Amino acid sequence: MLEKVTNQTPSPDFQVKQVDPVPKVKEITAEKQDEPKQQELSKEKTEKVIESMNDFLKESNTHLKFQFHDGLQKYYVSIVDDTTNEVIKEIPPKKLLDMYAAMTDYLGLLVDKKA
Image 1 (cartoon, rainbow, N blue to C red):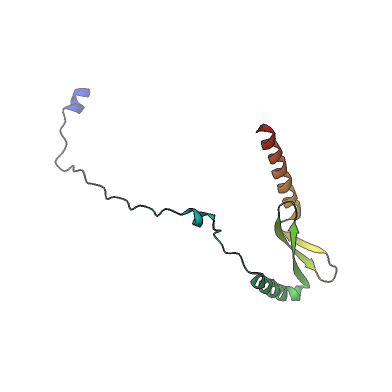
Image 2 (cartoon, rainbow, N blue to C red):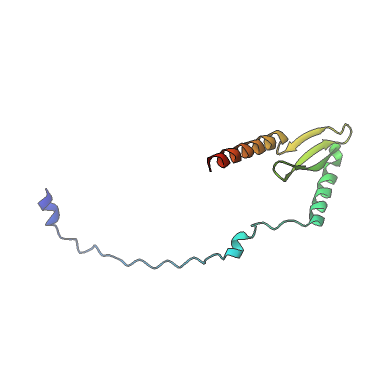
């Protein structure tokens, strides 16, 4: 069986074609790697957006409230009822943020102990 395979000659239709070279990808400088992908909104633009969203929500007697989470150092949004001042919904939920902050603290303790 092996002799039959090695004694065969390639068919005349078979030709090897050269592959075109691939152009090089531009290297990203260290300065561009540190830049955030999205530009941060200015305080004025953010206030305008919040104001327009609150105007939209006036008919449902609700408004947006941005709150700062101390553990994660990030903001989250609360939708508050105007009449009762009760929080209707949090985006993302504060309980979820609390759990995430607790997990990162615990993970930090594990890494620090092993190192």
